[in-house]
Each structure stands twice: as C-alpha cells, then as structure tokens.
Length: 336
Image 1 (cartoon, rainbow, N blue to C red):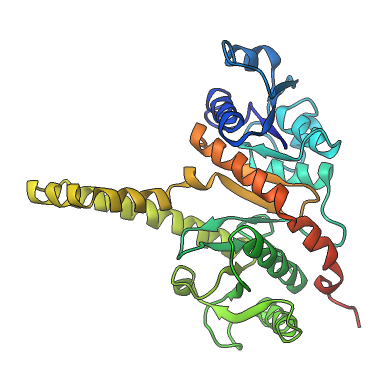
Image 2 (image 1 turned 135 degrees about the horizontal axis):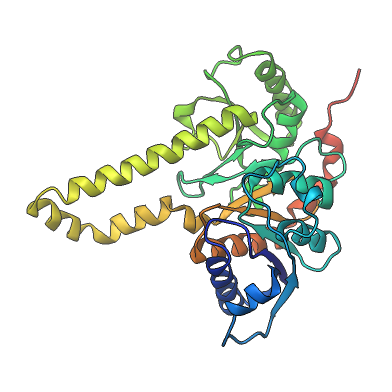
C-alpha cells in the first residue's frame, strides 16, 4: 500500500511529518510519497534508506491565512493540492495532511470528489469513550445541514464504526437537547423521522436522541450532528480533557504522600493519558470522499503523523467506501 503525505503542512512541518512517515515505512511496511519542496524534504532524509520512499515536488504551501474555499485552486503547486491530485490520479491509496481543515475538505471535494450520491462529506473524529470510542459525525464541515445530510452521516458513521471501531451492530444516536422524540428544532425532528424509518427497515441501529451528557457514557457508538453543534461538542470535550489532565497532575504533585500515590498508580495514569492523547488517534477521516483522506492534527508531531498514516492504511483496507457506494440508494430522501 502507498500513502501520500503532505510534508509541508502543519505547525511542525516538515521535520516531524517526515519523521512520522519514515517510522510508518519502517514499522507498518507501507510505501510513502512525501510531497513538498524536493530540496527541503531531501535535506531531512539525509542518511536515511530511501527504499519505499518517493518525493513529489511541490513548490508552494497553503497557510492558515489562505482562504480555504479557494486555496487549492489558487495554489495548484502547493503540497496539499499536489497530494490530492496524486490521490485522484491513483498514485497512492490514501492521502494524509496536517494542513488547513477547510482547505483540505474543499480541495478533497473539488479534486478527489465525493462518492456519487453523497450530498456532503463529513469530518468524523473518534472520541475517547468506552471500549471502542464514539464517533462524532459531523464536527464542523457542514454548519448548515438538512435532514438528508444527517441521514447520510448516520449511514457513513455506522459503516465506519462497524469496520474500523469493531462495533457489532453500532448504535447510532442523534445529538439533541433531550432524549424525547419531540425535543429539538425542525432539523432534529425531520432527521429523527428519517433515522427511525431506517431503523425500522433494519438498515441502521438508531437508538434515539442522545444528550451531551450521554456522549461519553456509552449510550451510542455513533453520534450524528450538524457541524455547528458537533464542533461545539468536540471543542468542549477537548477543553475538558486538557483541564482534567492538568488538575490531576496538580493533585498528584501537591504533597509527598500524593507523589507516592502517583507512583503506585503510574501505569494506570499513563494508560489513561494515552487514551486521551490526540497523538494516539492521529487524525480525522473525511468520510464521504471517494478515496481515503485523513486530516491530521495541525500540531501533529511524528507520533501523530505515524498514527494518521496507520489510520489511512486501515481506512483504505476497510471497504467502507464500497459499503457507502453499495447502499447509496437507501441514503437518499425520496422526493414526493
């Protein structure tokens, strides 16, 4: 398998991106195409065995100041745009970038294209919760949604949870302000009806509305949301996790007795920290694009890029895109 890696995007590019890609080549047995200024990328590969590593020259870089809606079209020779074109042309099996989320989503939609029949691609991170985690779809790609979008998110999230999260008959919940079917606005009411119909047809396992408090308590494996609400939930969760880890560190270093207790709990605490570490997840899949695209964290280090490449490999091998294509007729709202 060959993974295309945007080497020039992200806060720690290109050094950490390249380190993570080389590690993936060594440990995961995957071939890598590093996309970026050839002389710059080559300088960070000095003394490294180049077997399984290619460099694709790209003379420009998309920055956070660039307009995400036009960035890949205006900067056709940027590392992100070249990466997406290589994926479109079949040069690799998946693409990974730590660049601008908006630019990557727009570029993937315009260049690689959505799966035929999918109205909108979605950002679908897996949050730490329970044995398998919980997928949130969408978390910011689509601020304004229709009920049909949410129906498609539910199907796509269900396929992802089944194949990659190893959930048997994944439970799909609709993010809402209450569990009753009457809660929410018109969008939630319409989406609830569509999801319940799909459940009755035994196409997805819809468990009803899920409040914010139920997201991390194991009430569902997939949480369906419009991008506005989903992004607020995601950013709040990230902030709470950082706060808890900071407070725990303060508690355990407060006194000698607490330090002794921390020493006794060291392995458990490290396991908890690892489960909450974004570097262990790697990134977020752009679900609904016709080929695998992974958005790595903007602050990615080598470990995070390694994890994102591992995620890209798993996504590419999973058959999720085929599942979506084979079920697209059920994912459309029939016009009366």
